[in-house]
Length: 127
View 1 (tube, rainbow, N blue to C red):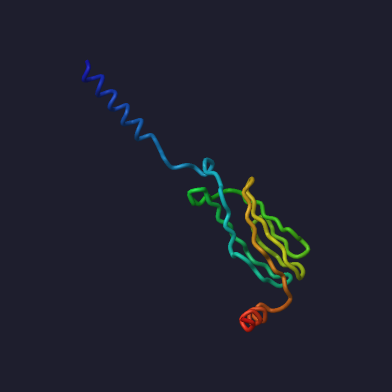
View 2: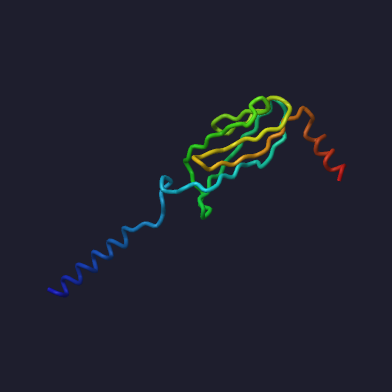
């Protein structure tokens, strides 16, 4: 009887260990930070650029399938839709924000009618 009881305990303990799963579902993962790419952008009025966001946990695990709320600090300069599609509106600088709950990240956007190549040449020739 004692051997039979020990065998039952051993089988039960083995099943219990096998049923434990250390991986967490997306619902259990807590966002810690958001990385937006590209990092900073210069676009022309009416030009569009797709933004991407990577959501990370505190231990740098990527979280998929979370809804990000995109917004612009100044919609007269640039707007962004809820899929992260950025559109330049008028010359100026603004910040685009990606938010999930109380976690937020931002990038600086410059809208300029001057060609990017000219701006690039100005920066490289002045150094």
